[in-house]
Length: 328
Image 1 (cartoon, rainbow, N blue to C red):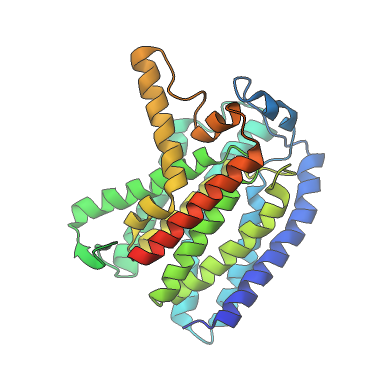
Image 2: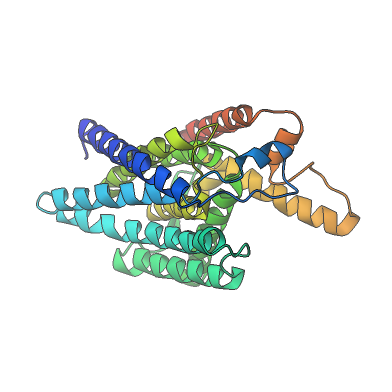
């Protein structure tokens, strides 16, 4: 097992390195005028955020790359299996972050508001998802066992059902986290709690590489939160939200526990459902269920302050995570 003391040191190292990167990168993004483009139909209070540096997800990614590679070098002589298993999950998350970066780059640097074509974006996400799922099944020989919370037992799923199901989990999670990223500090706060819960589960089940990787993610996201909390000095953009979606889904599948996301990732789930309901209801009736979707905007337009929404949604995620730990 990874000693808690060492895990804490990795988390703190990740926090410090990412914080230093943020102090360097945020001014550069501001100088390059890589600024947020606010929706004209969005909450009026968001118009003042126009021009706030975005693509800040690269801060998290760079911090994680540095610390993960450092951890790989450290463990290579102590636990080669652990060291080698750190790299594929890092590759998955970097892959998603890269697609988000391309989308942000086209929108913000090349000033093409359409960004990466949705079909190309989905194709890229799909390719990375397929490679990762096949690696879990064949490369790590994890098979298709899936843990059922509450029942606390594994069931074997036929491979022809497991592969598309696992791919859907990754794509749905990345999309859900992307939808959650709409208020200063919301996605960062919710995701760091979810990743912390998954890391605790990894500790309970003795999955050492995920304990190390989870600690690195937690440290990096907490550091970015220093720049992202209200009033935000930087936004993560698709670079960060797709990256974090990849992290959460990648860890859950590695643990054979994708179903636990329905509980601990309840906020991203609700955000996604709110959009689906809003679109479907509007197409059928011409009316809206919510003042605006995703649902965090509904609460904003109902008079909630941004940090109020973040606090409530974070507390809900924390409670859901505690429940999740009880049922695994």
